Amino acid sequence: MLYPSIDSLLEIIDSKYSLVSVAAKRARAMQQARDERLPKYVSYKFVGKALEEIYSGELTYRISKKVDSPAE
Image (cartoon, rainbow, N blue to C red; front, side):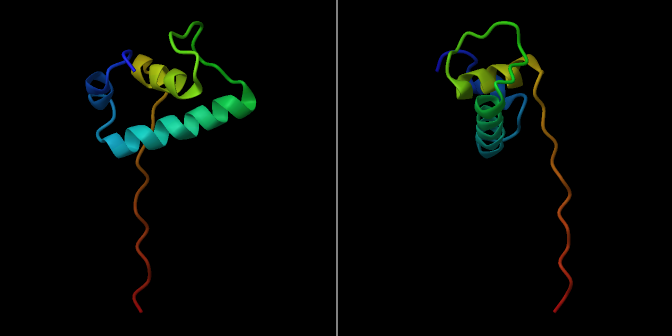
């Protein structure tokens, strides 16, 4: 994968794990619903398209707060 580069994506999303998780979820949703947010993509695969959406700022994510479990 040449575009977008991993380094540029890691400036947007803080960890490789989060990046992979967000891209995989978006790629799966894009494949099922045929929902494309950008007018033109460089990549023809869904994961590449999801990464392009992250790079363009069209796709973002948020970290949910951890729920404390009750003490036993």
